[in-house]
Length: 185
Image (tube, rainbow, N blue to C red; front, side, top):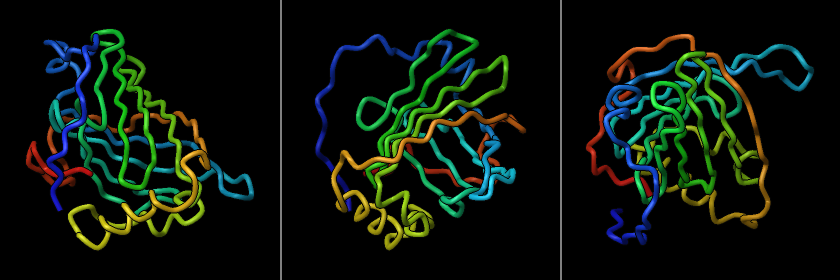
């Protein structure tokens, strides 16, 4: 299913400029959150993020309750934004997912840290197995969209975490390429 509905554009101060190409475009990060399981034991949650282009991000989740999810999102004015906080140092990327989850990621280049705030829908957080899969699989994609329709938008589980970048390189790595106009919502 494709969506041709365009959301209104607003003037912002988030123009990408030359620092986008130098700092973040085509950068691929693998990072670990130092989380804990229900018993308080250390439990690494590994995530993988590729800043594919000025219009898309691609990611995979390898650890934690959402492990087994591969997705991509718009990273422009429609459902997400890249924002340079300090060129060469800090970038923020925000996006809205099909599940109703809102994600905000800050990449600290000099310290090689990722800081996130994720507001999972309550039903999404309570049923993480429903979020597993690959967006390129139509059944997974439709199931994810269905999660956003369950419960109230104000029923959220907010998760703030910080992760250490364990690997940084350019290119897709084990993730897949998408078209720059791939449907994301």
